[in-house]
Amino acid sequence: MGLHLVGNQATVDADGFVVAAASQDQSPTTSNLRPPAPQVQTPLELVGLKSKRKLISRQEKNAIAAAFRSVDKDGSNSIDPSELEACLRGLGMETTLQEATEIIAKNDTDGNQRLDLREFTFLAEKLLLKQREKEEGQKVATCQ
Image 1 (cartoon, rainbow, N blue to C red):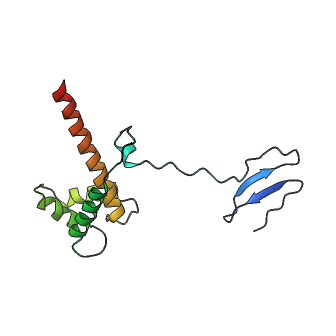
Image 2: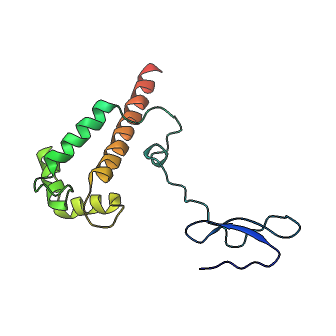
Image 3: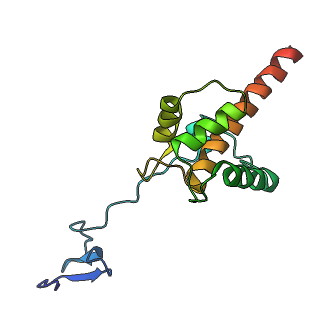
C-alpha cells in the first residue's frame, strides 16, 4: 500500500490511516483520518449514576468471580442459559430457561449466547449499583 501525495505531506499509521496531513500551505486536512474511538458506557453510566465513586470493592470482585466459578458447572469458563437458570432457582427465584436466555442475551457482548467472566462481572456490577441506589433512596426517605 503506497500513499502518493504531490506537494503534500502525510503521516500514515500501521493500519493505513492518515494520522497527520498538511498541504503546501501547511493547513491540516481531514481526508482518510482515523475515525474517533466509540464511547463505551461504564456500568455507572448505564444505571444513570453521576457519582465517580468506586464501583465495587476488591472483596466484591472476588465474590463475583467465586460466584461465577460456582455457577459454571461444566468448567467451560462461561455460563449458559441452563446454568444461569439453575443458579437463579437455587437462589429461590422462580425462573424459566427462556428468562435465563433473555438475561444472557441482554448482557452477552460477544454474541456467543453465554456469559464469560467479564460479562458476568459487568452484569453483577449493574445489579449491585442498582441495589445500592435503591438502598440509598430508602435511607433518604426514612430521614425526611
